[in-house]
Image (cartoon, rainbow, N blue to C red; front, side, top):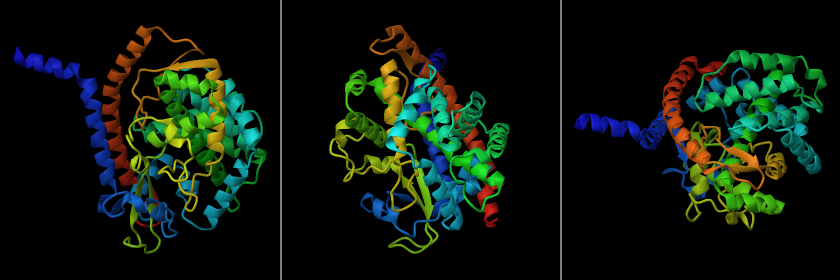
Length: 424
């Protein structure tokens, strides 16, 4: 009888303890992927005071070759990882790709705001904020690239592909190459319609994969994730949402900055040293932890406080888009403007309410109840949401453990990056 009681208690409390244990185990697996060669920053060898110095050092310029961890990212982003701006090694090809990306993103603030607002205005309600946001940023990216409104069939291809990428990255599902292939073929057939020159020296297929990787994988995924995080922050804090709805752009910028501090879009960015640095030999793999850096130097770092950014970000441990001296995110200027304009539009239409968990990895895609601006859903709906999310988290965490373990093994087996560089 006692045994049955213990089993019943264990099963009943699963949502409160199992997901956290599984996440910790998954993190341990990923930490071990790179073996003993990885140097965690900040960490014992590189304290937080040296974070910016090391991150911006010219020797910390390698991106893929020489890191076992690269095989994992290439696995999730292939085909096309070899022409993806974030994963190219320094050199002529990287310079050509980076220049092309800057050209597409060289859009005036007014045009960015107008485009983001128009796309957000067409957003269809969805139970999960990431699902709501993906079509918005698919249309946004399409118009940046092609200078024309996004056809529904293109939007569906882009969303399907981006959802496949981020689902695999979060280990809640496996990759579906047919979705990627359909989008690649669509883009390759329309290369003559882009509004800016594409990178020189690439074949047509490589140019299509470049567009897919930069604008229709990374851009759509990261902007949708950012939207979901900001939305969850506001949904959990009605008073903050009310202030953001009537406040000026400066206040909304503070909310966005604090969201990126507490829920950075990047967990770990790795670089391979191409020369000696003080205390760090050539060939070292540096793993820069954004969450740890963003916590350092802030009182009560787990508490959301937009007022931290009342006086700007210059002297704070806050680098949501990387560091300008070393491969920053090319959308560092466009993304905040677009997000602010999109939320102005969304908040004018909807009230956001959520009782679901909000974590940095956001595997639940941001469950949120949408009601007309200024109204609240019945209390029973939020209670049902909380219970539903807790139990979904049990199954989701087990799926992540199984699929994550499988994909780590498969990525190491295929060694896509190592084979590309002839390291294996």
